[in-house]
Amino acid sequence: MATRNAAREHIGDRSVVVATWSGLLNTDDGAPIMLPQWPDRTVQVTGTFGTGGTVLIEGSNDGTTYNTINDTAGSALSFSAAGFKVCNEVPLYLRPRVSAGDGTTSLKVAIVLRTPTAIVTKS
Image (cartoon, rainbow, N blue to C red; front, side, top):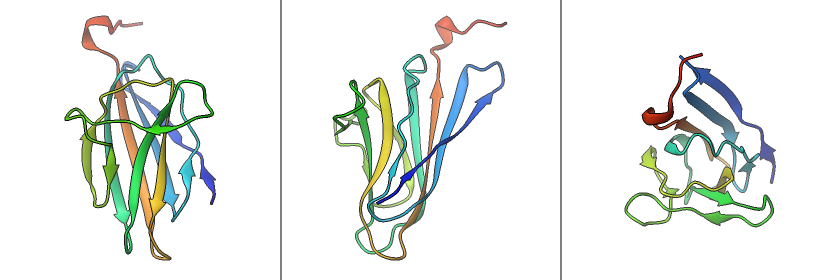
C-alpha cells in the first residue's frame, strides 16, 4: 500500500479547487486534504479498475479514523466503474482509498471543491 499525494489547482477567482490523486493502485490511499471551507464537492473517478476494483471516498474529523462518506442519496460514496458523484458530508479531512482491485488497477480521482456562491468574494 502506498499513499499518493494530491495535486491541487485553484480555478478562476479561487472559489474552486481541484484536488487530483493519480496512479492509485490496489490498496493505495490518497494523502488526505483539509479544505472544509469548500463544502460543495463532486468526485470523478477514471482509469482501469481491474478485477473487483473499488474506490471509496473517506472522511475524518480527527485525521486518524476514516470512514466512507455518503453521496446525496445517502449511499456509501464508492466507485466500481468510472463516474461522477456528489459528496453529502463535509468532514475536515477527505481522501480516496482503493479497497480492492488487481495488478491492472490504476485509477485517478479528481474532486472539485467549490465555495457556496453566497459567500464567494472577489479579491
